[in-house]
Length: 266
Image (cartoon, rainbow, N blue to C red; front, side):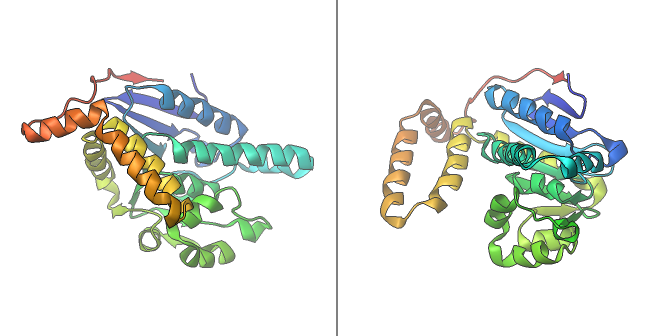
């Protein structure tokens, strides 16, 4: 179904894999469009509870494909604007998808590849992973990914790396908040599964609202945010899932959120 990515849906988890290992999973226009398709599919699939994003082989994503960059050099302003806007919209789609996303960073994440890391909710990185905002060294800037990087790592922490293009190792990425956990390469799958198992325990509706809360609260003033948060909590308390969750807690049993999914690979 896809040429540049792989999708596997199993046990409520959708695993999306960049699948161009011969070019270190660099993304081109085809991959951007296929990622749009797959994340729209996941967004509407009620059986999917968690998304894992990773790369095939030993690299997560090496950024934009060199051949695509050659085409960009000769394109008009309008063409460049249209493609840049489309990429920005893809990052926002992944960032705002109403399901938790876990980044499984199995190797280098360079330029726009680091952007895909920044839009994941929780990130586990191999201790061999490296990260870089190398755009300034070729006359560009990490523009499309900047809203997500600044929000995740804060402006003060990310200025040095945006301006210098200097590479970060996994421990650097952990220190500035780009990743949540660093593990040995052989323990990566186990650490990701641990987080997935924890996420599956949550109410699907509560996780959706939680992601919305995390996006909207920082944008509001204290004068307006009180009403928004109070309204959110009041609505949730009357929801079917919250009623089931509170009832299960009182009855000392596990809540029943949804049916199990069947395995499917594309």
